[in-house]
Amino acid sequence: MMRLFKDHRMSVSQLLALIPEQYLEQLALQSRVDRYAKVLHGRKMFYLLL
Image 1 (cartoon, rainbow, N blue to C red):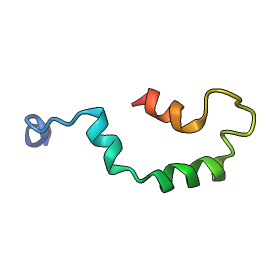
Image 2 (image 1 turned 180 degrees about the vertical axis):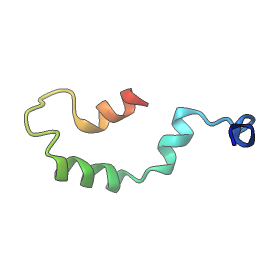
Image 3 (image 1 turned 120 degrees about the vertical axis):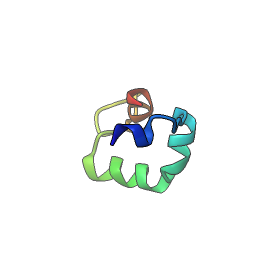
Image 4 (image 1 turned 60 degrees about the vertical axis):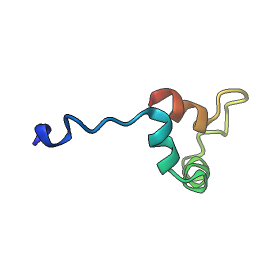
């Protein structure tokens, strides 16, 4: 199964382009991840994890 995806390469910026901004905003609101953070917001944390 891994052989099928071996030659398919994608950069992080291409991956992030597939995720709508509205979805990230909705996820941040639902999880209340930005409630206590003053500088490091949920969207930035998600980008750093990728």
